[in-house]
Length: 347
Image 1 (cartoon, rainbow, N blue to C red):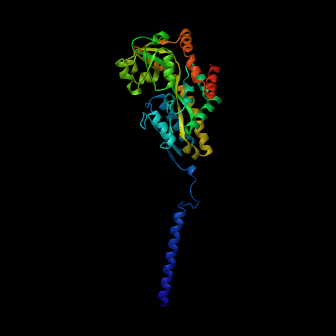
Image 2 (cartoon, rainbow, N blue to C red):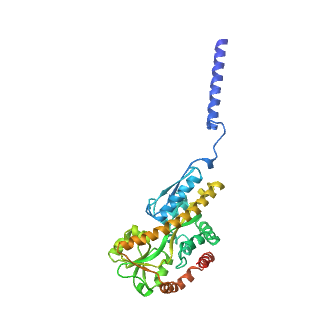
Image 3 (cartoon, rainbow, N blue to C red):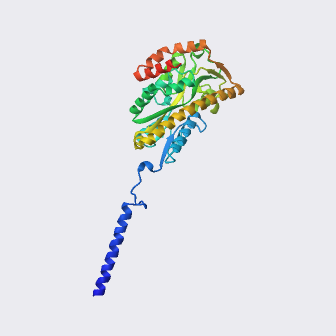
């Protein structure tokens, strides 16, 4: 009996030690015994959606930003860029960031009017005249205030704006060298109150057509003309069916880098600073890249037989003065007005 009791006691003690060992491993899985890891130090996988093609300036800006964040965080935050509309249209991806389906998106401001009227500030006509001015404006306090207000209205972090280039007039049958040339012409525009107002003021017939239908609409003369950045004119081969390009540079086509609010707040202060610096550095590289691309693309379009008309001072005065009532209408908000006036002061 004594031997049996001793054996049972030893067995109970062994089971007890095993049980204690199991509980210890569950509560402290770190083999170093130092406790749970800080979430800020763990690797994170983020998504960034953009609708433009892989070689478009907007997509390139997103990829540049992702690389800079990865480098600044030593690979802890890896941002995968989903381009060419893989995750949906601009309004789709904007909504996905707002509801937390994805962490980031880079929608064009021209497609965000249904979310906030503040985005009209970025495309007021003849406000931007060169890339140096645009870069200085984008780094101003007025630009920061506008981004903060947009982010607040959307319930997101509006981090930065990057650009795809100046917009110009492309037409099928004849150059658009004066306001009278635009009268009665069917201009493709995005579904945006500002764009409709701008081309109505020129006496044109603004026609809302989706981006993917532009080529066939020009080819079949469903539309007579459109406004577009020259990178897209070349990449989408619009020049094959519309041979007249007037370099009006009436506004640029930026997008806003949006971050889901919870995702942004989950970052440490150090990582937030890394994101902000990456966005600023991306802006500088984006401007340098666009400047080069625009110059090279004009030469390619000329080689392809496109008739290109430069904007003269007289044309500028005529087009810009025609848009004055539209500008007054869309600068009623104090933040938009401040941004617009800052832009003018830098011309």
